[in-house]
Image (tube, rainbow, N blue to C red; front, side, top):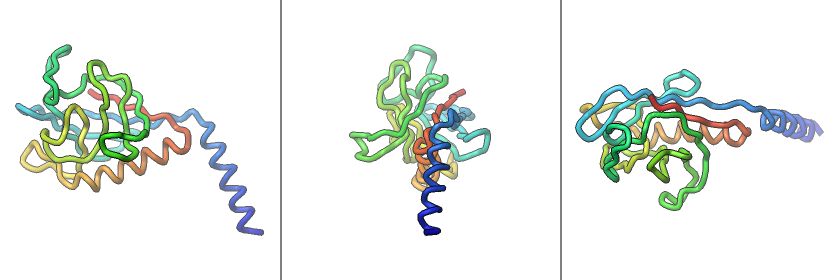
Length: 157
């Protein structure tokens, strides 16, 4: 009986939360610019989450396939299935001149084709370490937000 009441209460709380119009806000601040990569810091609701590594930032409108960071801007993020990685992942939508932009694990610019890599450490300037740990922690937070019906957006500056 208590178990049933707890389940009903939990279902009610989750249904209320799912109807909320909360938006989980990510902010990526690009900090260091190298010849082939860009290091940054990622925040969730203004709280530091992890470091990021992207391809090189280029002037607006210039793109070298597989070697260019996405343009600064605000993008909607959804959790959906990646055919390439064969699992659910964060996916940035409506990125000008790019498709299939994901947030995922990886260590160097060789591991990204415009995507955002995450890590808990920076090594030698253009390498993020403990990437799988950082990714798993980030994905868990974003998946919970998505499951609760919250929107997710990322601002890249």
